[in-house]
Image (cartoon, rainbow, N blue to C red; front, top):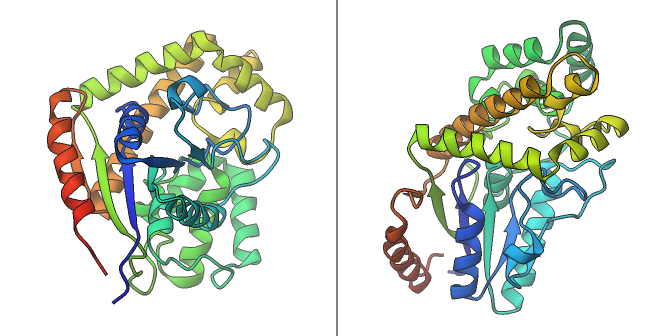
Length: 309
């Protein structure tokens, strides 16, 4: 039987230390990093996406970062194709692929043989929901998805109209959730999934601090750039659209910043729920128990020494 390729994955909500852990493990394990984040693909969106800086990379090669212009779209199918190509390229160099990110559907689509195609597309259904969104707004559109497909709704931000409509389209056309294929998908890689988390109150405090830090680093400049160009997909990321009412004089900066914090906390909760319900992970709290990394490294070592086919 053919042995599956080894892929290390680091997942979990925002602000739990995925970036620092990935760099540390890449140095120890001769690895290269593949970003599993749907927003870090965009050039110029550095602060709001918590994109790893050149200094933080410490010479470690990173893939699927800064590979799209703000005006371009980027789909889970694009990530699936380009992520698998990156895995092959990294392994061909004799190195370990390390996928890092919080976009659960992207990571699952990469690791399993999800079929992402036109079989479940319906322009009529899509147009129906686009009209609904124009009349009633994104929140009511999302609530409609939540009634039909709670699981999908909890993995998609209510402002991401494109993804919400796509999930409704798939459900109406097939009767299945976009997250639950009709056939059990086959595992394509021998992966080890590290899930990072920490106590909820501490996580929310870290998120709030991170947002304040982003604002001081120039987050508003990035948000204003998106506000001016109003591209369809890249504005959907949390940390950008919330500032639009401020630019229009309808909210104060304090109110807009608080909205970013609230949406970031809600998203972190959805990320945790998604990974815990849908993927088998080894969970660690390295925020409160940093010394546990030696136990984690032992688990990784055991996995690297095993084979799966």
